[in-house]
Length: 443
Image (cartoon, rainbow, N blue to C red):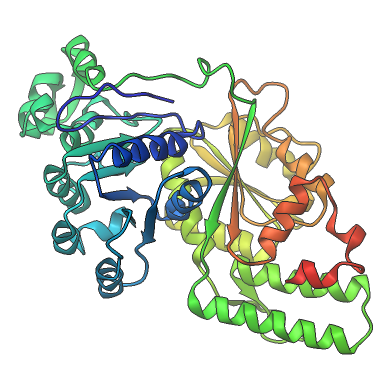
């Protein structure tokens, strides 16, 4: 986690993943608003964590505000922008890929505070999204970047991120910056670096850094919930299935098996897959919301050079996740019911540097294996069994682990995912009380 030293017109805030960066930012934004310094805030973040900002403002903002997440196509985003009420603090949250597409509309909105979350997404100064962010930032009085790993490949990663904050720090020419701080070889590629003390001093002139190890009051594990918004079509399908379930259960015999089957179908919808007919073997994909969120997480962790564990409940989810990794040409280890040589999969993940992701089915990998090569675990979906859940968490948090462990839960808003997550947080097994409380659980 990192604090900041103010420098006109911008300032940087660099933070470790999972150490409360959004909470701190909400506090800073709130103080700036209450002091009469700002009225409009633009937050740019990876798609997977847009809803996290909404949740954090709801929890911690003790001042009047109106937050809008820009979703949909470019035209819809522009319409949402125009519909923001002119009252209290106005906050827009948008993903990086959209910034270049609606740059003119964002400039016309005239934000006076810009925040770039996971700012390594703009480390490439020639990318369209980076250039758009730079141009918008120049029009903002206050600027902030958030990241736990400002350097993911080499020291040159700093240039574009700091250009957003204050281009006088490292100059307006990446070519000049590269020639000054890098030793260039064939094809103008860096083969070494120089003037590093000066680079570090300049970088720290507008920021300071506190690592997880320094944050002694942090717990040894950190749970994060990433709210997922289902697409309109998937959301309508989900609500219809809930209504149908109420009607059928109200008319017929209420048994644990019957209710669990209904809940299973609801969870499958939030994960993106469902059988069109009970007799069919093939699943139909009805949503990509969680998959898109996972892709952002995979990209972020990969940029930091770390490894990642992904846990899921259903086979169609696991197959789609592995397809995504193959598309990205990322090596992975895999364990689910059909995998025979599980020891080899574990060895590859633990020992081979280029095997970056472990994908496991919760019921199969919840006990007896060690995955300490990673310190971040994503729960794509969850079972109702608390014992399976807590055991699955223990795969990365066990002897041999030297880092704080971060657990990211992809939870579809307004669905059974929230019910399951709340029950697990209370250390409850839903199946134990399902008959007496079936209406509230499905609701």
